[in-house]
Length: 320
Image (cartoon, rainbow, N blue to C red; front, side, top):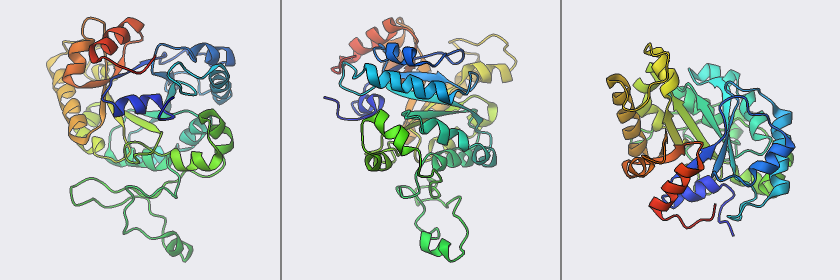
């Protein structure tokens, strides 16, 4: 039987690489597709809503199909599902104005969200706060006004100071009650259990929510160390397509990257390593073993053969 709701988190805790499938656009979300994807070879399904349709009705049907066709051979109710949100993480105000997207996505019972175009630590902190319920206090600045103080007129805490080791404190979560009756049945838990467990891992060791960021602009690379330090982020990736486009490459650069992009990759990977979060990168059957040895822990391959080779390299025990 599974030890966690989120198969991706369970594997990362074991030091295993995880593998995803799912297009970044053009994914038609239906009940039938959910039933089919319940038997996927992948550890999680990427649902591309950055450029694909923002289809909440389809997402709800897709998750229902997964549940009804489950559980997976590994004992999980469903494979993990992570959605790329349409909002760009350019600044905190933009993220807060568009936080409704995170509420809608999480309300369908998915297991994570990827914030694209992440450019500042403040934007990423606003993202984490928008995905959390306000009763979850891990990582929240203890010097901020309490709920009782706020009842007396103290301003809502929207950003904190920094800890002694330089990591940013979070403000209180802003996700409201109301979606647990739709999300909890997908996870196979009660409403109260969902409120307790839908919190970002590894910030909350018992959390089942996996939040990621895509660093795909010069600004995001310049701020990658501060972004990776934000509590609540579980993985990060270099976005070679958009980063390459900003540098003038109309075709997506492939490794070996041009020097500026190779330097960016080295920097992002080092930031992930320094702050204990997983690094995502595309791999192939020919290079996945070397990339895992280098530190890649989230593999974009869209190819079951890449996963087969990588899993064999790590002698993975969990059934697919």
